[in-house]
Length: 528
Image 1: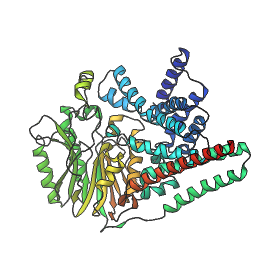
Image 2 (image 1 turned 90 degrees about the vertical axis):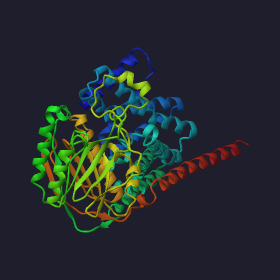
Image 3 (image 1 turned 90 degrees about the horizontal axis):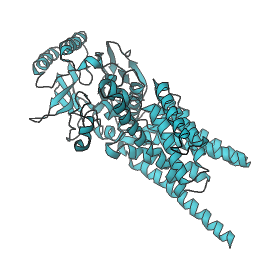
Image 4 (image 1 turned 135 degrees about the horizontal axis):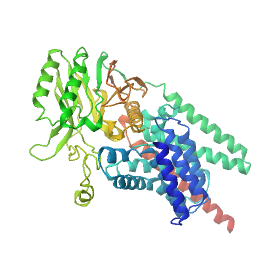
C-alpha cells in the first residue's frame, strides 16, 4: 500500500513537470525523494539513522538556493514525507467513512499539503534570516527552527504531533534525552547530528580537516551522551506488581457498529474476560461497548456485579451521552472494585467531530463515520483511581500529545499510563505501528509502564524505559496477561516540560544571530 501511494505521488510530480504547472528541477525531486525516505526511519521500518541522513540531505539541498526556492523545496520534502507517512488517513475516510474516492483523496491530499508547509517554512526562515552558510547556521539555527516548528505543529489548529522526528529514535541511543527534554529534545539531538554531518562534508570539500575531525568527535560524543543517559533510572517501583489482562476483541471495523453485531461483540468480550477474573485489572479497548452508556446500563450493571464478586477492576471504552444534548463523549469507565471515568479531551477532526461545521458539514455530509458527533471534555485532566493506583488515561491519538500526557501525569501517585484505541480505522497500514512507537516514547518520557489496548492490535505492555514488555498478535482474538510494576517519582521532563527545551532552542538561534552579526562587522572592518 505504501509503495502504491508513493508511486502515485511520483506520477503527480512528473505530470506537473510535463505540463509546466510548477518549475521543478533535479534538486526539488531529490528533496521529494528524501522526504519519502524519512518515513522509513519510523515504525514499523525503524531504520532510525535515516532520521539523521534525510534532514541532512535536505539541508544540503537548501544551502545554495534562495529563501523562496527553499520554501518550495521544503514543501516538496513535506509532500514526500507526509504523503508516505500518513497516507492511511485515506483508508479511514474512504473505506470506513464511505466517502467517494475523489473526496477522500481530496481531504487526505489537502491535509498532507497543509502539513508540508512546516518543512517549507523551515527552509524559508533558515535561508531568509541566516543567509551565510556557516557552521552556526547548520548546527544551531537549522535544528532549532525545525524543532520549534514541530512544537508549533503539536498545537496549531488543535495540533497533529504525529511523526515527530524524535519518535523515530525509540531504539536508538539518542532516546536517552527523552526523560530530560521530552521527544523534542530527542528531535534536537537527531538534527544536531544532521547539521554536524553537513558541516563536516563542506569542510572536507574545503580541505579543513581539523574542523572535520572536530565535527566527527562532536557527533560521537552526542551519541555517547545519549547512550549513557539510557542507563539512568528516573523512577522507582510503587507497591507490588499487578496482574493485568488486556482484551483484544478483534471486531472487524465493518461490523463494529452494526446493530446485528452488538450482541456477539458483548458476548465475545464477556467470554474472554471470565477466563481472567484472577487479574487485578482487566481492560477493554476504545468503544469496546459500541452502545451509549444509558442504553448499555443493564449490561454494564451485570458486568460491574461480576467484577465486584472477583474483587477485580474492569476498564472499558464506551460512549457517554452529553446530558440532554444530541451528542456524546468518547469515554473510559472503570467498574467493579473501583468506579471512575475519563472523558476524551482531544478529538480527531473530521473523524470524531467536524470543525467549522457551517463550512465543512455541507461538503462532507455524506461521509458516514460512526461516532462523528462527539464533543471534547473541558474538565480538568484527572487520572483513574484503581485499587489505590492512579492511572493516567488517554484515548486513541491523545497519547501523541507530549504536553497533554505530561500534564495528566503530574500527580506523583500516577503509577501507570493507559491508552485505549481502535486502529482498525486504518486497516492493514503502518498507522498502528507508528501509534505504538509514539506510546513507547511517552512511557520513556514519564518513566511509567504504559498499557496499550487496541481492538484489533497492536495490544502491548510497555516498560518505563520505552521497551516492549509483551505484546499480543495483531488481527487475532487475544488476551494479553502479564505482571505490571507501577512506578513513582518524576523525570526532569515531568518537572519542567517545555521551558528548558524552548530556552535551549532560543539560545541556539540567538548564538547564530550574534555570530552572524559579528561576521558582518568583521567584513565591514576589512572593507574599510
